[in-house]
Image 1: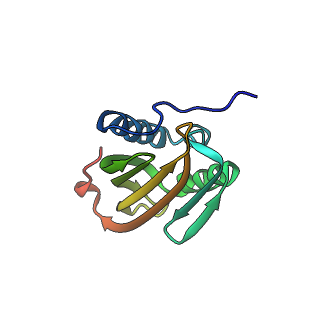
Image 2 (image 1 turned 45 degrees about the vertical axis):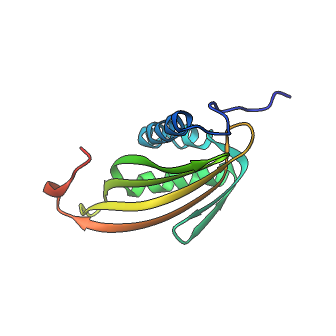
Length: 139
């Protein structure tokens, strides 16, 4: 059986870390849970706020629910730091809830990759700020 690989592979350089961050931003902005899940190992471990998500199936379920309630989702990720097989990003995203209230969420993520370039651990700390529609930055 052929091992899944997601290039670029660790150890990361500044250039390859930036590529991984952009790939993640693009995937999440697709709002396609299957596409996003393919960047993670089959047994990936997440902490997202206070929620724990384990494995690709749970990732798909989690993201499917997320994008049913977080409407008009738009995300930006920024490389914060990297070394060997780890990348840290800061991010912001905006969304509208089903009642019409807009939010901007800020946070940090820490990613740990396996040797095949798939994320095996993802830890996200996120805070939401209610905003007015005219305060949106990520249009």
